[in-house]
Length: 144
Image 1 (cartoon, rainbow, N blue to C red):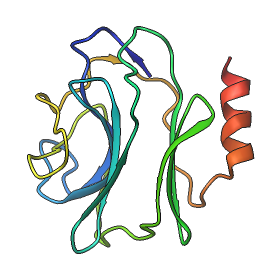
Image 2 (cartoon, helix red, strand yellow):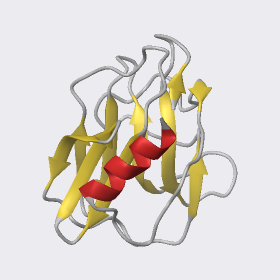
Image 3 (cartoon, rainbow, N blue to C red):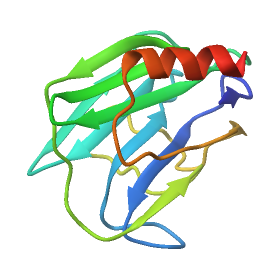
């Protein structure tokens, strides 16, 4: 991702129940807050989130990676772990992966003022297994 400037914000990627337009059911989403921090959230009876402390709305290219498996969820930026949570489940529903736009809603922390991401996104991938920390580092090194 390359946030355009300090006005960048919105959903980068997430899973929602609407193929087009705003979803009414959504989780497994990564979004950029108005402050430029990253938040990843899942819903499993309640919201569970983790977030970066640093801002990435700096005009530079960044690789954001999230893993979710039986041991929990981990947020990586540029190949390095920046947050983690022991939460290991998300809501079970049929839906679509959405890129660059979808509902975030006011119940999630630091909901961005726009659901639309303003910036460049490249090479969005969703895997059916969680990548290891070594895999994440290798993906970052390969993209440099």
